[in-house]
Length: 467
Image (cartoon, helix red, strand yellow):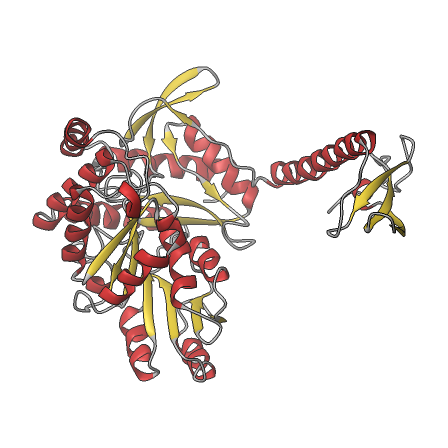
C-alpha cells in the first residue's frame, strides 16, 4: 500500500495559451507521521506537472521537479522493498566462487563454504563437462569470441547452421531458429504468428515468458484451468470463430514438476483445428526414454507438436541460448519478423560449439538421463517416507510444499547453514499460500549428496515443527 505521502492532491489545470502547454500543479507532502494521517513534516511544495501535449520551461522548475520525482521514486521503491523483506519474499543472490557443480563454493559473510547444490537446472550435470569446456575453447581459436552482429547482417557462421540442424534432427522437426534465450524465443513467437483475427489458449500456470509473449500479440486470449482438458475444450469451442487457434502450454511446469497431458491436448487440437505450442525448457535432454522431451514422454512421435521452444541454458549445458523448432514455414517467417532474433546479437561461437557437443553426447547415449531418473525416484521416495508434502510425479523438479513464505525462507536459510543449498519460492513466483522449497535433482548427484540433503531436510523440518 502506498503511503499518504505518495498520493498528493492535484490542483487546478491551467493552460498556457501562448505555448499550447497544459500544466497542472501537484501539492503533496514528502513524508507522513507515524499514524499515517498525512500531516506534513515538511513544507508543501508545488511543482509543475506536464501533460503529454507539451513540456514545462525554466531550468529552476525542471530541477525542482526532478528532485521531487526522485524523492517520490525512492519512497515508492523503498516501500516495495520493505514489504518484500517483511513478508519473506525478498530474493538474495548468493555468490558462487567456482564452476557450477554438485558441490559449489559459496562466499557468505566473507567466508567460503562448500555446499551440496540442490537448486540448479543442471539436470544432466553438463554445466562444467570437460567435453563442453574443450569444445568452447576450440571454437575460440577457430571462430573467435563474438560476432558483433545480428544473424541477418554478418552474424551467421557455419557452426550456427550446424547447431540448428542438430536440434532439428534431435526433435524430428523441419527447421530450427536460435535465439539469445528461450525467453526471447517466447517473446518473438506470438506477435509474428497471431493477429486480432486469431485466438491463443494458454494454461493458467504457464511460465512468465509465455505470458509476456502472448501480451505482445493482439490475438483473442483464453486462459484455461491448469491441466484441465474439459476447460480447454470449452475455450476451444468459444474460439471457433477465430481464423487460427493456438494452444500454448509448458511441457513441464517449472514450479510443480507437472507434465502437460500432451496426448489429450493433441487430440483436442485435431478435433477443433488448432495448432499446438509447447515450451520444453524443463524437459529437453532428459524427459522421455531418450530425452526427447514431453512428446516422447507422452508417447507421441517426434515432430507431432507444431512448435517447440526450448533452452540451451538448463539441461543442455547451462549456458545461454534458446530456440524455436518446428514447421518449416513457421521458422522461415520467424527469421523474417521475430524482433528478438532480428535485433539481438547472435550466439557467441564458444557457446554454439559447446551446445553442439551436448547434442552429440545426448543423441547417442542415455546414461546421464537414466541416472537422473534413478536419483529422482530415490529422492522422492525418501522424502515422502520422511513425511514431507511433495507433489506426485516422476520429474526431477521436487517441490517441498510448505505454504507459508516465511517458513520457506527460514528453511532455506537453515539448510544452507547445514551445507545444503536450496531456495524458497513464494508469491508472486507461486500462488499465495503455496510457498515451497523447489529441489532439483541432477544425474550427477551421488547417493551421498542425496542422503545428505534428505537428512538435513529432516533435521530442519523438526526444528521448524514441519515434521
